[in-house]
Amino acid sequence: MTWTLTDDLGAYLAAAAGFLRSQPVRHTIQLSAVETLRARGASAFGETAPLFGWWRSGTGEITAPYPVLLTRLPERSAQPLAEALAGCGRQLPGVTAQQDDAAQFAAAWSRLTGATSQESRRSRLFRLGRLRPPAPGPRGAARVATTANRALLESWLAAFAEEIGESTGPPADVVDERLSYGGLTLWEADGAAVSLAGLHRPAAGTVRVTPVYTPASRRRQGYGGAVTAAVSQAALDAGAEHVVLFTDLANPTSNALYQRLGYRPVEDRVVFRFGPD
Image 1: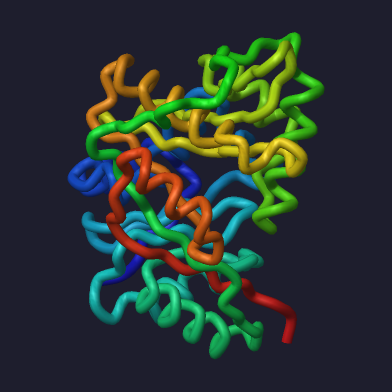
Image 2: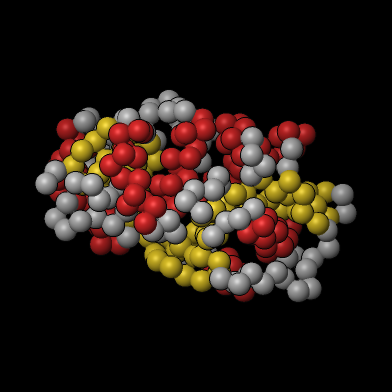
C-alpha cells in the first residue's frame, strides 16, 4: 500500500471521486477545489499546478500554493505520504487536516526535511441545519455583486486574506472566478455596500460559504449575519443539500453568530505552518 501522486485531475477523480463524494460535507474543500479546477484550469490556484494524491483508492489530498489539504488519513500513511511528497521536490508551506493527522504529517515532514512546524490556526466546520435569519435584521438588503463592484471586491478580498493570515490567490483572479457564476453577494445599506459574503461552486450537493467580510467600521451592526443568511438561503433555493462554512476558533464572535443562524458544528481542523530549518 503506497501513495500515488499525480498532476492529472482526471486520474485523481477516477481514483478518489467516489470517496470524496461519500462525505461531501467533510470533503467540501477538496470537492469545491475540483470544481474550480474544472472551470478555470490547472492555473486556477497559481502558476504551480496542484498535485493530487490517494492511498489505494480511498483517500484524497490536494497540494497547491497552499498547505497540503488532507482528508482523514488511513492508519500509518502519514510517513509514506511525506516521503512521496518529499521525493517530488515540492516545497510545502504547511498542512491542514484533523488534529491527529495534521500532527503526524507535520512530524514526518520535519523529520524528512528538517523544516520546522508550528500550529498556526484552528478552525471548525459547520453545516447549516434550519436557517434562522436575524430578526429583526439590519437595514438594507442583499444584492449579487457585478463587475461594476470589481475594485471594491478586490480590496475587500485582499483585506479578508490579510486578516485571516492566509493567501486566497490574486484578488483579481478570485473576483473573476466568483463573478462568473454569481458567487459574491453584497449587503447594501443607505446606498453603500457594508458587508460581503461569497459562495463556492456547488460540489456533490454541497455549497460552502466563504468569505464573509465586513469592514471594521461597519461591524457589530448585524450586516455580517444578514449577508450570511442571504447567501445561505440563496444556496438552498438553488438546490443545495448541504450548506457549510468554516470558522476560526480564535474568534468567538463569529462562532456564536453562525450558530444563531442555524449552523451546527461538524468537526475541527488545524493548520501547521512549515518554516526553514
